[in-house]
Every structure is written in structure tokens, then in C-alpha cells.
Image (tube, rainbow, N blue to C red; front, side, top):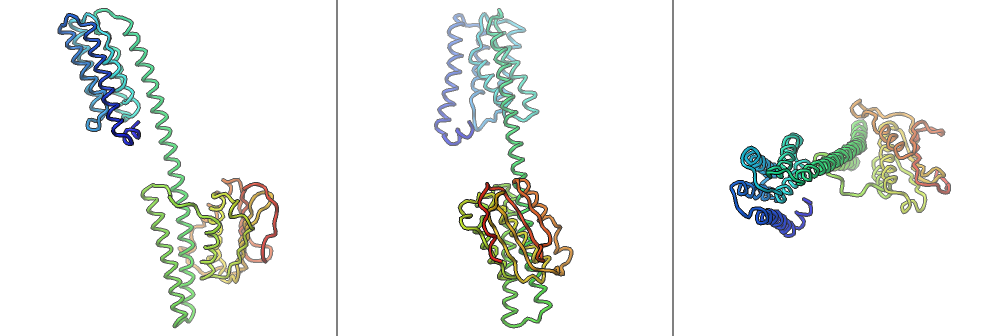
Length: 387
């Protein structure tokens, strides 16, 4: 209702005016129908009913809490005066009772827990006491008692559903932030490892002239990409907003390998024909993450690698990804540059969560191999690719 009111301000204003008119009409009708001989008790009933009805009309300037407190206080004060003193000859409490139920629903549904725990019972009691101002207890007393219980139960159900929705939303945001944190780790590890390797190569190799300029240009490019990636992801983490860009796909895998090959060993990439159109977006994003982490580890742990092979093909169990290198000796990196080893562990969890599996270890022909099988539906097995 709040969203509808913001989207249609004129209709919302008309609805508020209509609610006020209906409630005041009920008060006026009851006054004319029952109070043929106006007395002081009837004047008290009319005054309290008018105040309560006006408090029930939503207002952007007056918060619900203030309107509800005012209505409950005025209604209870009027009931105490009339019940303890001179009763009215006949009271229905139509407009005032409906207004109190409207306020009761809003308080139990939207008010903070402490306010709802105190103000809710007060409004319910005021609603039950409104028809008891009559000198004789009639059927309206039972009707309003039942309505108060029903409205209270319904409002509490709405409140519980809203709380559950907020918990679910918080869980989704928490999972998204954790995913972004893992992505930030992957991006930083990928770019910074390249910077460290290139800087060490420049330090231990006699570079001068154009070769030195090219090395430092690659370092500068990798550093700029790392900073841009960190700024983008940290901004999302800080604002708590969902990413508005599509997840990485197979086209990004090709771009990633081309970027890597400019500063590292050559990469031979083979992707089965037609996979760009058939692989689901979440599977393509997982493939991109695995390839990025595998290439990062090649820089870290395979300093002497001369070639990297990446193959993506369909197999009966889904989609198979293999990333292999021919390196045999790890790079000499400090403990800070090595990282904490969370990359492949996180990707293994991601693959298992999707119903697949991921393994990493020495390749039969030497070097290192990362192999992942992700379920996308059975398909025909194709040749693995070049090499």
C-alpha cells in the first residue's frame, strides 16, 4: 500500500479523503439515529469518535505512532468517563470502532516491537470498551470483541510474514556479499600475482630501453585493472546493492586468456562449437571463475610453464573444463604474495553446490591440471581439443 501511495499520490489522497468521509459519516449517522435528545454523554461519544476517526486517516506529516497514541488515549479516556459516570442511553460505536481497528492493524503490522507490545493492547481494549458505553450491553460488545481478536491475529500473521521476508532478504544479501568477497579475492590474486611476477622478472633480468618500458607498461596495466576491479566490488559491498552487470560468460573467458597470454605463457583455448548459446549463464560464470583462478595459480606455482591448455567440452555428465600447464618448478613468492589458498577451495564448494565436482593435481603428462565437471544436461562427447 505504501508503494502504491507513492506511485499514485492523487489516488492515495482521494482514498484518504474517502476513508475520513466514511468514518465521519458513520459517526454522524449514529449520532442522528440514536441521539434524538442530545445529552452530555452523547456529546462525549461524538467528540471522542471524531478525534479517533481523524487519527485513523493516514498522514505523511503525523506518524502512525503519534496518531495511534492519541486515538487510544482519547478513546480510553472517553470510555472510562462514560462507564464510571453517566452512561449514554444507546451507543453503537460504528465509526470509532472501525477507526480503532484500522489503527490496530497498522500498529501490530508496522510499529516497532516495543511500541506494538504496549500500544496494540491499548487499542484493542479501546475497541472492546467503545460499545460498552451503552447503558445496556448489546450484541455490538460481542461483535467488537471478536473483531478485535480476528484483526489482531491477522495483523500478527502479516508482521511475521514481513519479518520472515526481511530475514530471507538479509540472507540473500549476505550470500551475495560473500560471493562478491570471493570474486574480489580472485580478481586481486589474478592481477597482483601478475604484477609481482613481472616486477621480479624485471628486477632479476637486465632490462633496458624498449624492453624495460614494455615490462613497466604491463605492470602499470595490471595494477590499473586491479584497482578498477577493487573499486567496483568494494563499492557494491559498501552500498549493499546487487550487481547490475551481467555475470561473466564464455566470451569473457576468451578475453581473459588473451590478456593472460600477453604477460604470461601462451594459452591454447578450445571451446566446443555451439556452447556459447547453450551453456546457462550461471555455469558460464563458474567456468570463468575457475579459469581465472587456474591461470592465477599458474603464475604463482609454475614459474617455468611454457604453455597452458584450456579445453571446454560437453560430456555425458554435463560440461567438462580442463586447465593444464607444463610447469614443474614453483615461482619464488613471499608468503604474502602466495595468498591463503582459498581460491580453489571456494571454487570446489561452488562446483559441488551446483551438483558438479572440481579436482586439482598433477597431470599424467606432467605439470598441473584443474578439472571441473558441471551439470548442464547430457550431451554428446566431443574431442577434447588441440594438444
